[in-house]
Structures are given as C-alpha cells and as structure tokens.
Image 1 (spheres, one colour):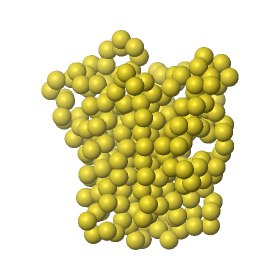
Image 2: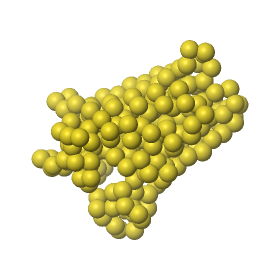
Image 3: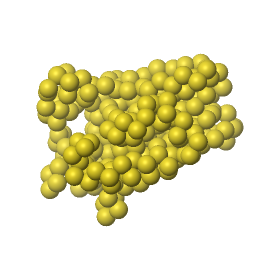
Length: 257
C-alpha cells in the first residue's frame, strides 16, 4: 500500500484552510481518506462565527475521518451528516450557524476494504479513480460549473435549491453529494484534490486528469502543488489564467490501496 499527501497554504501569512488526512485500521485491511477545502469568507466579512474556517475544517475533518473509519456499516453520506451535526453542536452555543457565511467546506471522502471502494464528493474538489486497466475517471460535483455556464451569479446560490452545496451547519446537504462505489479489484489508485491543487488541470491546462494522476504517481503530491505554484507565479496578475485568487490553499492525497 502506498499513501502520500501534501498540503500548502496559498499565503504563508494566513492559516491553511484545507484539511487532508488518511486512516488505516489496525487490522491492516482497508482505509479511508478525507480532503476538505475550507471556503474563505470575503475580506472583513462577518461570518457569525467566533472560531473561523481553519477551526471548522479541523473539527469537521477529524469527525468525518473518525466516523468513516469506525462506522464501516454506515454510508459515507450518513457519516458526513453525523460529522456536520457533531461540528455544529461544538459551536452552536457561541455562534450564529444560520449565517450564510458560517464556516463551510467542500468534501471528498473515499473508503475501501477488500471488496468495495466507496466515494463521496460535495462541491468543487475532485476525486480521481484509476481503474486496473489504466482508465482515469474524475468524480466531480459539477453544479458550480453548470451555474457559471448558464451565466448565473454563483455566490447567492450557495446551499440553496437549484444552486450548489457545501458542508456547513445543515446535515441534510450530505444527501446532495455525488456518491458511488466500485468493486475493489477494479480500482488501482485514488487521488483527492482541493481546487487549489486541481488548478494544474482546470485553470492552467497543463494536462488532463490522466496526466495529473501520472504526475502524482511519478513525483508525488508535493510536486503537483509545486507545479501549480510555479504556474501561479508566472501569471501574478491573473491575466493569462483568470482565477479568484493568485494563490490558493492546496491539498492532495495519493492512495494506491
């Protein structure tokens, strides 16, 4: 089994809002990975929360990893719902969780054992699945892309019907996630990326998803992030490659279970 992960803040002066972790059971069979991308609120924007996004992603990520690994008879969507509830309860007495900018995150989860590989993707992070024959599939929640293609303003449509969804304080959003499973013998490799790492494909067009997975296998997650940073530095004004931030937090996990 091979597991590698890397994460880096977009700005070293600010906390990294991404979360990446892997759990391997003591039995030596199976495992789980969790990647979250915390949603950065607008500058000087009130979120109704005294804790902030890094606190939220750490709490939600830790709860989700524990539940995914320990409750193997529970679906990933239910694990996410329980993790959201647990995290909300941790600050409901001090924070306004009904605020539209309450701390929130995108989610990628994968879990495997000898028989099955299960996965869940919510919002704009990505899970890459390589089959034993070499074909690579990108599991995407494409709601944001579809809204932008329609010319819609995305921000007001967060966590609304007809819009897109992130993990915040409402556990029912777990049912909106893209989920599925595959026979374990059909899966060779898994890779989970926040959108700060997937920029290599989606923003800078350095290669497709198959090339991205090949880079991760050959050089590792840190090399992917390093290449994204080089592309960002080459376009500091964001003119050649328009994007919301010059540099974004990035996280990537490679798992060959």
